[in-house]
Length: 290
Image (tube, rainbow, N blue to C red; front, side, top):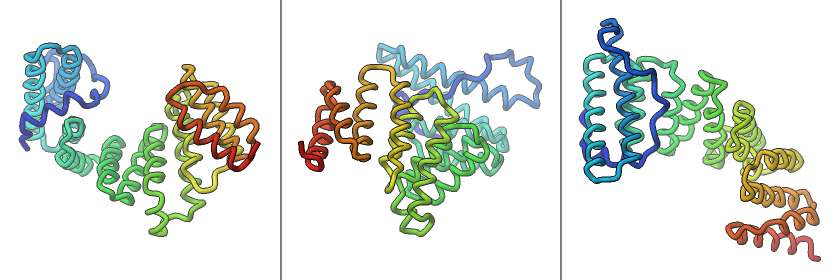
């Protein structure tokens, strides 16, 4: 499958690839039986180096050079797959690159082939889940995300993916009768909590877990309050602390603690929070007039 060079332009704005694999080795040191492994390492390294060069590129000719290099890398993937059609990691890596360059359908075809050759790759299950979720095929996405989670249960991302999918398609899962309301909400909280426990130092996972209480029908606000209070301890900047205070004020309001909620709101002075702060304050005043 030849990918037109013009499609490479979008790659320059995409996320950087995964961490580089091992440093380059001399080709003569690689046994012939491992040639595909060696060539894939080279392609991964070249791809990373191309993105790194783009980050520091200034002149138009430098950008053009990166585009040409990326097209050369795509040609390399295509040749590797042609020469080693049963080597699953080649399809996986090529699929990741195609996904980053915006070629979703072509990338999915690579992931499907890789999964056919080796069905034990959690990263591939996750990518197939992403494609299905983007296509609106939420039940298929759920299945792939579950498989990714089961293959790599200590990877927080796969727990996060399940939680986000259930939130995004909650009403459809309920309409299909696949979950009862309390069941899906318990799963949503459980998946985000599991992600947080597997990445305790990553504040983004903590934040998503805390926000999940606002995504469900009948949250346990006492539990939510404890989560937001813990999150406040992990907040770094003053702005992050103010965001957490705003959410905590909302939780306090839901618990009926309107005095405590007003006190928290009075501590917020960041301009970007003015509208949200006023909206919450109006709700509090409407329910609990002073």
